[in-house]
Length: 126
Length: 405
View 1 (cartoon, rainbow over the protein chains, first blue to last red):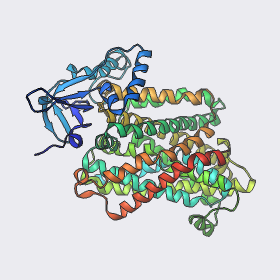
View 2 (tube, chains in turn cyan, blue; view 1 turned 30 degrees about the vertical axis):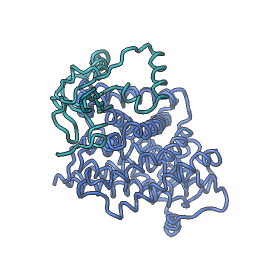
View 3 (tube, each protein chain N blue to C red; view 1 turned 45 degrees about the horizontal axis):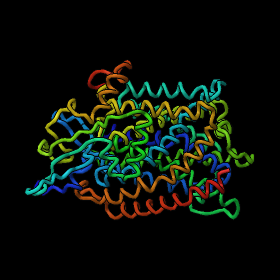
View 4 (cartoon, rainbow over the protein chains, first blue to last red; view 1 turned 180 degrees about the vertical axis):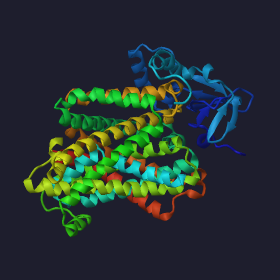
């Protein structure tokens, strides 16, 4: 593939890690602008905070109020350098591990505290 | 050989999928109040659904991606929230109605009030999802759902006047009770064309690992399956027209619908009606709750598959767990299942534009569908369905107020 259309092919695309595990979608794509250097695509962001900003300021406000009500303080957002991209196709493969991502916090928490306490949850395939 | 068994299974699945709480309720209401006159609306619903399922199935088989996945990627997160919220809300209402359908059938069978059944039904459904595979959910309930053929037997035994039925398949409008007529028309369309059906279908194509080789299977499943399923809904309408209309009974409780089969087939008809209501609604319960979990997981990029153990896709598994239990609440606190069903069907009809109109873009995208993009017949059909969906959105609320009572 020659030219890649950032909005069409990268933003919102399904992300997978080294082991092809699904690790969310490209919720935001950041340009880095430094004095004296041309702008470059620097970061892929995964996480609810990044999504909320794309909807609008009102949505960010509602989300903030909602989270305050439940005492959630930490934003589990992953910021991944663009040079971790290994392949761009139907999905985008990143040279990362699912376990190391902050944006997968909820998945791990649910697995540990809820799902694996219910019988029949373990193993690979049913 | 394997192909043919897949075709047969697909067709059977669609039959079971078409007839559920919404079509049973709205078809018999239509027959009871307007004879055969609303049969054409059912036909319109069947054709629309067949086209939508063929397209979303083709989309998945060619691109190896689900409809929800492409909705998020091609239209962006901001737009995606619209179908996500709309589908979530209406599917939740329909899900609660299906749990209500199972619970009412169990009430009629045991004498124990439906509100006591809602939570056990939801728990049983949850356990099947937690332990079972996609094949079990898809095929198990579909095969049992064949019991719905009893509607065809009942209708035939009542010896309908076929020319009159044929006349009902042509559009017409009554001179009186117009608001009620069009209200029921909207309900019937909402019951036939449910977004969860094609969202589930496109996710199912990925679960079953469809490829371009399956395009034939897809076409037959979407076409014949819905046709057979639709015939059973027409049969329910015919039976209601012959049993309930002459007695002047307007369906406002599920017990009255049982008469539709008990009258021509006696005690066996009553028992088979309960079995049909119970099994088809339970099958739809599983499909809807999965459709909601699929849409969430695919939209947000979580791991998902009904063939994985819940420990491998925790957010997906917790989604269906929470949704099925919450959906049992309205019935458990005693909400009238039939009233809930009617509201759900109208809401479904109103929700259609946000999941139908994006298909116009996706189905003509050669990057996604290669040389399997829509031809002109499919595009004409899709434009008509899209226009219909906008009319339904605009008409739903006024008709609910004027004709809902």
